[in-house]
Image 1 (cartoon, helix red, strand yellow):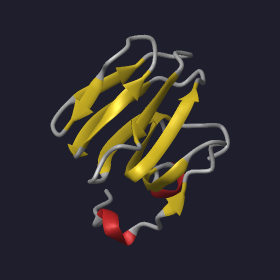
Image 2 (cartoon, rainbow, N blue to C red; image 1 turned 30 degrees about the vertical axis):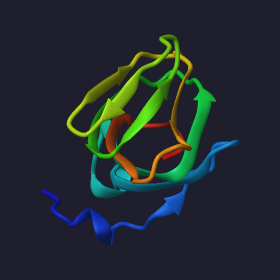
Image 3 (cartoon, rainbow, N blue to C red; image 1 turned 45 degrees about the vertical axis):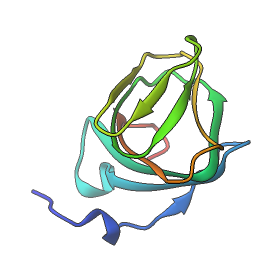
Length: 116
């Protein structure tokens, strides 16, 4: 079993090309004993963006704080506190907080990645 305050995990900049003002903390992964899923905490700060991108892993997201535009196949989507977002495999997606004044923070659960 594993219990830790998320703030104890290292916060690092997202390394996706085109990302701006976005930080991630890997909360659960192989290093913590997970065999199937990883859990990450994202902080898309005011003025921040995760540009459109896609990959084979689906995402399950729970929004903790703030709001941001959800970029993808449907125009005008906005995710806000307490919303759930599901991103299917290979669907182009991103998050835009470039007009925001507060952080857009969310938990993202994904299948374990090979690079972990």
